[in-house]
Image (tube, rainbow, N blue to C red; front, top):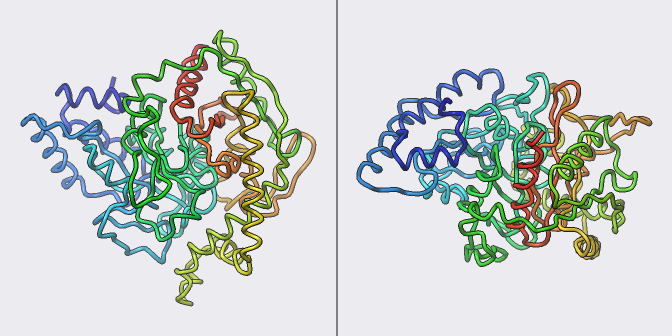
Length: 476
């Protein structure tokens, strides 16, 4: 077994037990990046090999003195290019920020470094993280790990591909409209959108309305996913909605086996015919759920209809999203010359925000509240709700986005650039924890994932259910 074949947990043990040196680990991953990244373009702004090897040597010297910094000691990681990294360019995939080098780390990056990780570069993302397809005018497109002619998804596409192709042992991501879940599903790995406040984001110019986006972990298995979440999570007084560690997240990886004695799964499928899906998506997901139930004696899967009106949810979602996107993008457009440097989809997002009145946002909040209450009713009967992670299979990487979904019964035109990802908004809008787990492949060998949506602040139980899914779905 090669070094890059080890899980992040195995790698951590090997480093701390001095069975592997940090220098050996760094060498192995940089060799894999040199071999694979030119084709897939997942890692960007990679630091010089000499610099990184020197950092690895320093980590080895610390271990020789008995200084064990943390779980990620000596572990290479590339940070998603939306997160601030001190001394390392953070472009957000935009030509406007091509030379921006932050003076400080974001809170999540700070925690990863304190756990001992070595930041080697960044992972590619679409411009400002907009659109579930990783391409931009600075670095180009990131290709799918299973078919280099297809999209990797996004916005954490670079992170997902780097993980799937073993260029990294573990990765961070962030999620607004499926940005962790879609690329995880399309690259056959695990990605977790934690409960809002579980991984607090700082610095931030607005900390009260911004309850749709969160950072979170990505990994090749659930144990690693839980371990990185422990590193990323925890309260911070600068963020008012940050959650504490009092609900059992400490030493989480050691309790993953303790899933509920009966796992009641609510399969929402296409929301009673509302969501269009490309042929084969639902079938692959249903097959994965049936295998989960068959292999385990503790799982009961039930097909259910939504207790909410998805049309009303979509309209409320668009109002809330547009308000946030307008506020986020507006400062970059103060300078008129920046408009020509921003992609059409970003300009469209900004335009949608203009004219939204307070009463409109308030009504959207009322609808969001009603939707949340409906989701709670579902959890009176089920421990986890399940949807596919995407409505289409990975598409041609030269497209900007799919203009239509060809279903088994007809073609449905998409009226916005993000409508084809409507399936991911429900966990986000309700602020619920959600994990994308691998579901399987179509006849062309392209992957699809399942969203496991957990109860409010039920991150621990959700990880336990995902761990059970991983165990039994692998028992072919």
